[in-house]
Length: 118
Image (cartoon, one colour):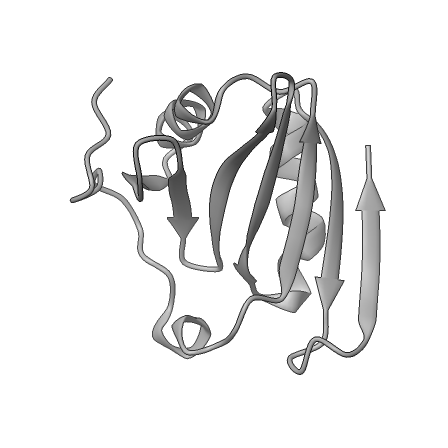
């Protein structure tokens, strides 16, 4: 599957969330390469686009995260999530068979609001 910088068809992040700074950060343990991850999200109905040679952004109406290679078997992500849907993000990652840790931060990034892990 080809994922270009123009992106694949799919839902875009809601305008009211698009103006926020990053509030979600995470790690995917023992995960496939980010290109494979992006393809997994596309197959699940998300939109994806290449943001560099090695990084991909995946999104839907309530979340947009950038996937980054951290090490041979670990990926990092950061982006914006509707705070009321952070559990849904965890459920989607688990549904894709991924082990994860997620941190949800306040809008000013001064307070850690939630931590999730699987």
